Image (cartoon, rainbow, N blue to C red; front, side, top):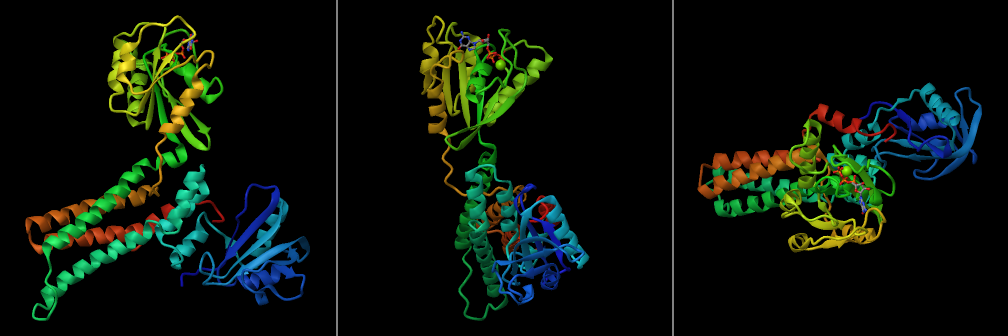
Length: 452
Ligand SMILES: Nc1nc2c(ncn2[C@@H]2O[C@H](COP(=O)(O)OP(=O)(O)OP(=O)(O)O)[C@@H](O)[C@H]2O)c(=O)[nH]1
Ligand SMILES: [Mg+2]
């Protein structure tokens, strides 16, 4: 077992608070607990059962009682880290928490680095690397959906099928070698077509996972919504209406907004990442032109687009540029300024499936736009891979399998097929944490906070 002495850290929330949690792990934790926590019922902590709350005195390093609180021991291997662990649930004051840590240090514990507890859990085989990464996702989750996704990853939603895929590939490779090495024995022949079919199905499954990863930013950042249109149609006014305050500058000059301005809003628990953009037009100066470049990027990358038109003016070439830009995108057209005398915007009505008339100035009709956002938010029912490291490995494994598939279909030498299949199996293994470089694991665990 991987074990390097006792580590200790504060693992609770912001202090002061109702309860502070001091956590320790490693060989020798029980002895430290015997010295710093005295159960009321007289037994030593090391004689208490695992996973049971014990009431007692917490002692400062001079032996004096500094709190009366609860503590618990978790004996390895049935603990988060796989080692002996203990947690003290003291009152959430800075003074008590730091006194408890000092007591632990005086007995030989040392401060834990960020992610040290989870790293020990990984090293001791309590979880694979993708699950360890999901722990960080859980801690940093900003939405309920993000947390649910992380919890599913932690439970091995993708890790289990990936481990099975790796085993299948290794089985395929072993079968091939067996046929070569023991050709005189009664072994089922190796069918290239079947092998090609199998790796093609696996490659498709990996490609789907990778596509899911590309959508995963929306879990915590919200669904991206770009507000686009030519200058002065009221994009920033509408954006402010949705934000609920004067987030972006509004003036009657065309070309007011020159950069992408972002703001997140929650509608019925669903997070949207709104982006106000620079009005699109020809002949703008340098800064504005750069801003317009960003408007195009925002429209192209957003999940949803709100195309704004000025209902009090006839359509012109700049508006038609917006019609062009929105082709093929999930767009709602907004005809703004309905509080003014209206013009005929038949072209807009014909170009878009959905057209809403509203006034960003009075707020009239804006609720229909929020309804539209909710109705058109992509419904993410899939559990998504969220880690960049995992996604890159999955992408490479899918490519390796596609190459293996091609070699098998073209009837190339067995070597080509096997090499690619083996490479894919190794890459999938790395998603789960097999043969992962020590530097890479260090990078992963340093993302965590201290105490986790
Ligand atoms: N009457 C009326 N005026 C509006 C409405 N919406 C916006 N305006 C006005 O139109 C002008 C331009 O509004 P903005 O929100 O800055 O327009 P924009 O599209 O963001 O403009 P740029 O940032 O220059 O691209 C301002 O004077 C607003 O007060 C509306 O619904 N009715
Ligand atoms: Mg603006």
